[in-house]
Length: 604
Image (cartoon, rainbow, N blue to C red; front, side):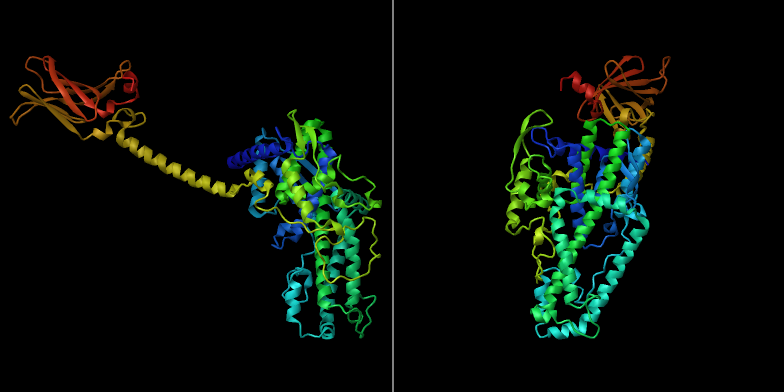
């Protein structure tokens, strides 16, 4: 529990600093200097649209990618303690939104638990079953006719394999199998529509979808979708897959009449189908963002959160959505320029022949006052650079007007280039992208579970060290025991003996044992005492060793020794004296006296 709380608090702090630096700008322009609450809301909805498209294009097949909810926005919420629960896209509602407080221990434990759950499997993020797609994604087939999963570049390879294969034979022998695949997919789509019809409120769902599609960023999709859907119907009819137009037992000769390679148009159909699928998933994500943000806005209004705080929360959510949506700088530039008040297209774009990139190309900048009160150039320089790169990449000469009708062109293309009817396929953020480095502090490489395992290992190691320390203290007399002196300084000399010849006598002392005196050359000695211990004078810091209870002097006291110890490289006796009868005094040196106090006293 403590690890979850600490991790949650740490995560909030890192996110606050990272997102704060990007959104506020300081001496440079931040992301959203000129944008209002609703502008940033549209930015997030657009980012979720794009994130959904990127997720749909990801073929890794992870279960969480089947979610209809905008996961990047939810994860961004966790970074700042915002939790949505019981989202229901079909009903158009998010029942609960909760802002977890850093100062509330229970809130932080809850947040840590959610972060751990998210890290564990990537999909357990407090999701309602209604946010999961009921239709399973079509599994990759090894069969050559499942062209919906083929890339455009695959056509040439497969066409080469079929150079000797007659087109009529292709249609005759494989039309039934193609139809079976189409019928299977039609049943799946119909089942999903029936489920939505049973569970949803059509008016609410339509309003949410309309709101999700209202952003300027969505415009190219509104041009591409009707054209792509019309082409798919035409291709299905041409291949004899349209139940209403196909005649049982007769071959459809449209392909031969138009002299079109059937594989080529099927490959084109697959490309169109994939791109429509990307857009549809993006619409799910964008609709989810509308629901989540509306509920958050209502919660802010209910608690009367001040505008500055609410705006900062939205900025953090916007940046977090970019982070977890894996959205690159060039796509950010495209979204941002479409929303900057001075550059955005007019609201009557539906009836105008205006390119979606009119607000972006060529990139422009303006001088604005930053949050720190300085005059800065907006957008940030890296966004301007990214916009320049985006304008160079896109072939804008083939842009189609927004008021084009799907039935105005009936030609069947044999390939679908990027940018067909204004829709370009987007790519995930690259490793060398400016934002990748900016979001690096949020790349928590270790999960809570891994941290907990590491904590257990460290605690085990600490316990082992504490046991070893207790054993050592038992041996050296550390802790509260004075046996081996302060910090066990006598332990190193516990078995040592030293001696000195003075006059006709030799004096010898053994630490923790006894002291003796004998005449030089004699084998017999006199007991001068047993080891009593060592004292350190509080005022001078001088160490004094004592041996007491030696042999009794004739008509006098029992013999004893006191040894005053000063700092020296080696332990030895310097002098020996008998100032009083049977009381002996030694001067000694030892490294044990070379402590911090000695250094201060001698200016060392």
